[in-house]
Length: 169
Image 1 (cartoon, one colour):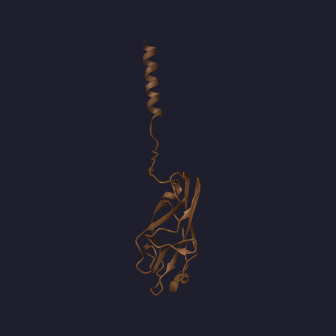
Image 2 (cartoon, rainbow, N blue to C red):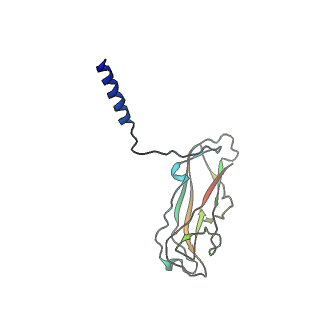
Image 3 (tube, one colour):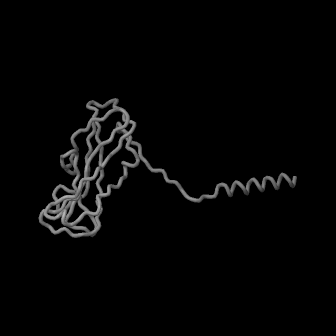
């Protein structure tokens, strides 16, 4: 009887130690009715625009464009009529660069411009439809820093946020 009680005590003690938490894992996501899933790294992404020389942005100058990719997976075209998708970007507009995304931080006299191919993206307006196929697809856009045409360029750090919405046709 003593051996059984000791065995049960050791078993319970080892179970408690095996279940001690050293950290947590949080799972985030959403379920939507679109034709494709969006890869996690595309849902919330960071695009590094670089450390840009002030003189490059003066009098409406711009930085080198960087790629902005939205990766889709598991696309099912059932129910689509055109097998295309449009993307609408929304953000707080720049007060000094017309059509640009506004920035926050110490830098001034700048905005973030986005492109679809060679065309500028208008905030709040759907892009030209892009063809998609069943399976995986990558939507390609560009972004660059645009200096104000007449306002001074103020050096400093900056950030900006845009949201995107996909519409399948």
